[in-house]
Amino acid sequence: MEKVFAEQFEALIEKYSDLLVGESSEETKEKVKTWALYSHIAKSMPALAKHWNELYPEAKQEMKEIINEIKLLNEKHRQLK
Image 1 (spheres, rainbow, N blue to C red):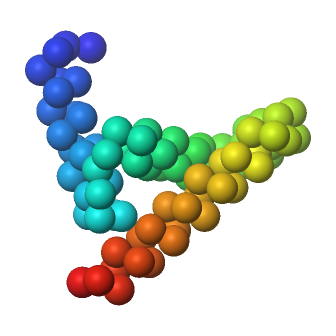
Image 2 (cartoon, rainbow, N blue to C red):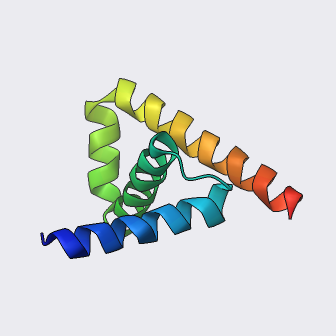
Image 3 (cartoon, helix red, strand yellow):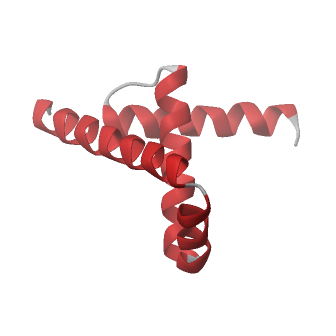
């Protein structure tokens, strides 16, 4: 991946994170990336997501926590607008 593209894409993720949850720290951006990719996988290949959830129950629980955190941050951010 070219450096310029990587920087531009990172700017997109930063803005998306800021608009979605009201912050764009490195930790939050990583959680937003993880949430977005998992959500896409779960919608486009639900059998794969189900298989992964069954194979890695601890990771499934952590994913649930990330999803809930993003949801709560989003709701809080929308209320502040």
